[in-house]
Image (cartoon, rainbow, N blue to C red; front, side, top):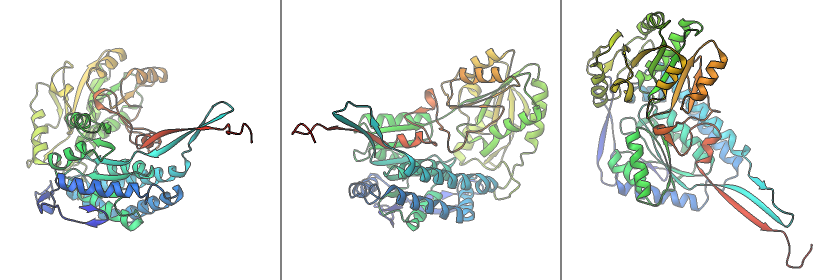
Length: 476
């Protein structure tokens, strides 16, 4: 682990194994942290916060250090990409071309914002001055998911460190390696010891103590909705720390009869449904397609799905690798049992991998359209109108992302406004860029956003300074 700028074992001496999901090979033994390790990290982070070794640096100096960290990550792209692929099963192509570059871009974007976010002066009366200032919220606990370990880390540490906070990061136990490496690079970049701490271990032994710790001022969590509920409980039963949640999704895609270029539409949908083996909270999981174009679109989708090569994640040609763990494979595999019509796929391999699968259903009911699968399985339902599609799209407990394909710009915007989701793309699939906020409605999370200037707000306290300008002598 990394605590106070030093590599350290768990206080208990216990370890756990992290494995390559493609082969089952043990990659490393990592410290199995506990509440005692969290206590130590919190004490260190609190001291670093109180003495101002980071928060009281000039904003321009914090910016230089974070830009240096981004450059070091960029310089170590090959190492970090390989580490991420081995640890998670993600394809090496995605790690090299998407995850590492986007992590670098996110860090640079937030670093550049440090000395460009201004405080405010309130419109007070002539005898008073109202100053509205931003201060770091304090010690922040960051709990990461296993599906995008490096990228999600950058999304969270960028604004948290930019705000002047100190942090304690708990990576997912399945995918801890790149977080540990970035923490080392942060020290090389000049981030002071005690500012960026990493405690490895599982949820009960590390995650819950972070959630309950009275010395932690805020939590930023990305992961399942069930675990998000637990962090709210931990906060309510401890010090009412602020909690930012980015949770699950059951994301709809609507394709109308006037959608331009069905070949392009099929490519977008396949990318949304199968990218990262469907292990993506914003993955397209439900496709509502107008009955007039359904057969043509499904034919094109099947052809595109055939081009998603299943194989070794270290082969640059591979687009579908193993799921992250045996446990997750077993969960996703259960969705291959269904009453729908298989358009393509439906097979599992080697107890690790599921091929791109498209299943058509007659009704919007059952677990395939209600539950977050988190695998490369797309459920399809025909609709007769845009109104029907929007209604079905909103029939979910989630509200993270959605897509609309139509050649009518007015209809597209009306549908996008009617869909209850944090990000709605029109005639495309995606999540925006570093300048656009990312987060959800309903049970997809609340409390803040990742990315954009909005992400900085959740790591700041807003303070009012009210100054009386009338001197006791009645004048200048």
